[in-house]
Structures are given as C-alpha cells and as structure tokens.
Length: 346
Image (cartoon, rainbow, N blue to C red; front, side):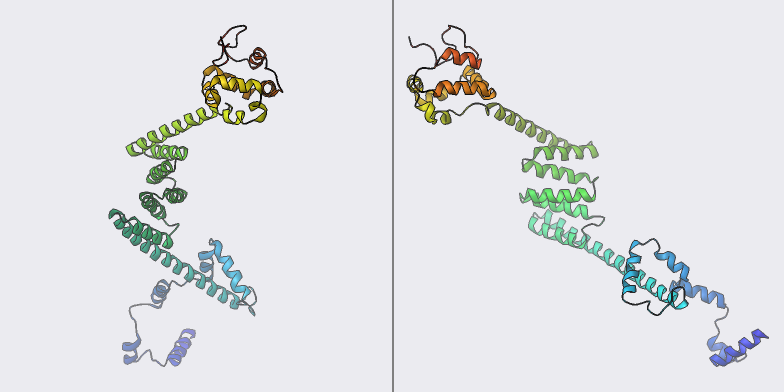
C-alpha cells in the first residue's frame, strides 16, 4: 500500500502516468534502473558525501587557513555548529577550496609548458651566439617557473650565456641557484667551476670541479678544469707564502727618511761609502743582511736595540755589539767581511 501511495504521489507531482504509452516513450529510461542512474550521476558530477568531502582536505595544511578567512567574513553566521545548515555551508567551503586548488594546479601546468617553450627559444638564440637574447628567454622561463622541475636547467643555461659575455659574477649566482634546486645536476658544477676560475676564485673553482668529477667520474672536461684550477690555486698560495716571507724585511726608504737615522753621523758616513740610498737598497739584497733584517723584525728587543744605536745622538755605534745582539749570520768575532758593506775600509 505504501508503494502504491508513493507511485500515485509521483504521478501527480510530475503529471505522468505509468500506464500511458506516450509517457513511457517520452520519459522511460529502461533498462537503466534508478540505482544505476544515481551511481552514474555521482561519478559524473564527482559528488561526495559530507564525510568524503572532509577527507579530501584533511591533509591539506592550507585548508584551515581558508576556513579561518571565510569564518572571519561571517560565512557561518547564523548556523549552529553540528546543524545540517552548518554542514551544508561547510561542504560549500570545501568545494570552493578544492576548485581554487585545482585551478592553481592547472595554471601552474600552463606556466611550466610556457617556460619550456621559452627555454627552447633561449637554446636557439644560444646556438646562434645571440647571448643577450638567450638570457632574455631564460629569464622569461624563470619568471614563469622559478622553482619548477626544470628551473635548475634554466638557471644553468642562463649562466652559460652570461659566461660567454664575460659576466662571470652573474654566472656564478645562477649556478648557485641551480645547485640549490638540484644538487645532483652535474653540468652546473662544471659551469660554476669555469666562472669561478675566471673570477680568480680558484678555491671555489676547485670545489666545483671536484663535485662534478664526484658525480660523473668519466667527465674529462671536469677533470681538465680541476687540474687547471688546482695549479692556479697552488701558484696563488706560493705567491702568498713568498709575499708573507718578505713582508718582515724593513723598507729601506722608510728607514732612511727617519730623521733620527738619516741625521746620524755614522749613517751619513756609511751611506757615503755605500753609494747612498741605492747602495743601502742593494745591501739589503744580500742574504746575510736580509737574515739580520728579518731577525730584527721578529725580535722587538733586538730591533729596539738596533734603532737605539743608530738613532743615538753623535758617536759611532758599536757594530760588534749590534751584530751580537741581532744574532746575524756571519757576524764573527774579529772577522772582516761578515756582512757586505760593513767591512773595514783598508
């Protein structure tokens, strides 16, 4: 009886008759059943129950931020929590959020596609040696996708174009950006090594080439670059060591410009015999004299003693005392010619 009553109500509500041939021809979907139609409809519209909707966003950390925003705008005002009205509004919020996320994903996909197209244009310009145009295209690719799956390639390619224009600082910056996106990209380390080499940053160049060889042991170009960078770094260190060793030798010009030394009778007499300032400078090239000078610079007490003797008012300094205090090589007792330029005038 209940079914018959329901059917009668349906016929009345939709103005149809289950026994009418014309209504059957126009409205019947046989052999599809109501269950089948509902199932297909849910599949087509991607309809979800309330609980299914909740599960679709529960792992997205940004969803709660979205809920907080719409709540602050009064979207849930007038709907009591745990009420059907509240659930319905909440489902609408979920649908709105998912729509935005899906649109963002589509937009990102479009950007990635356009970025690849810009990269192709950049490669074409690079092959034609139009490096300025290549840089422009790679930059446009990065504007579209600066942290995408291929962004490290855009940075690396732009670095190569910068290198050909001798803009090595910019190339290094791009290489480092590429490394931060993909630390396993071999090509970028070779380009980082080359650009650093031309900036005379041989230490960074060596490290970059070493990483390239580590990732790709058969990379002959990286091996060659590493060898050259190591040689330059060794040469630089040798120069630095030699400079440090000679830094302790006193500056002859500075010493002779000191009034206390220049006006000393002994120094005036010595300079006359040695040929003036140039003679003193030549004297400082003598290995024994250089050893004595270095000793003075390393021993403040000895230096003070020597300067006191040379800067004293009047009188000749005691050379044997000076030599003994400095511990200079060749300052033998009672021997002549221990230091060139200080031998007796016979």
